[in-house]
Length: 92
Image (cartoon, rainbow, N blue to C red; front, side, top):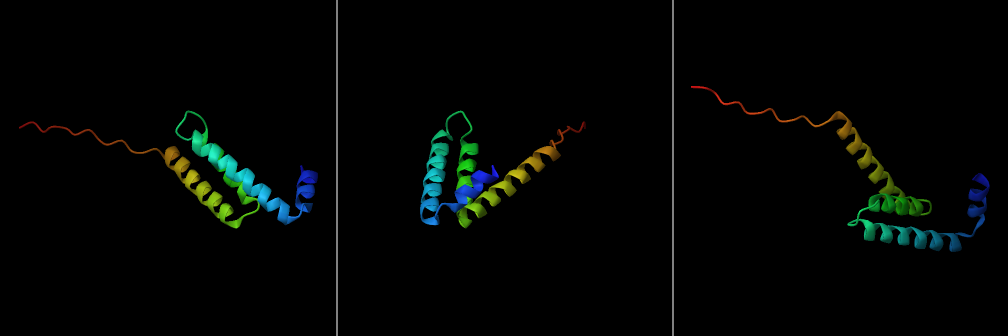
């Protein structure tokens, strides 16, 4: 994997950046199309963000923000939400 990464880094930025932009954008668009349909639309959108984050700082910040929100959501689910106590009627 490191050899592939080194080979990819040797590709000139003028070629690498547009390729990453096109691939990431296409994957995000596919994810947006799949979002209302049954399937992993959100995961595909995140994959597109991760691809864009390899070359673009803005996408890296967006990916990090999404990761923070996902971790917070999972922490909240693990903690559980307290159930409301049933209301009891007082007898006169």
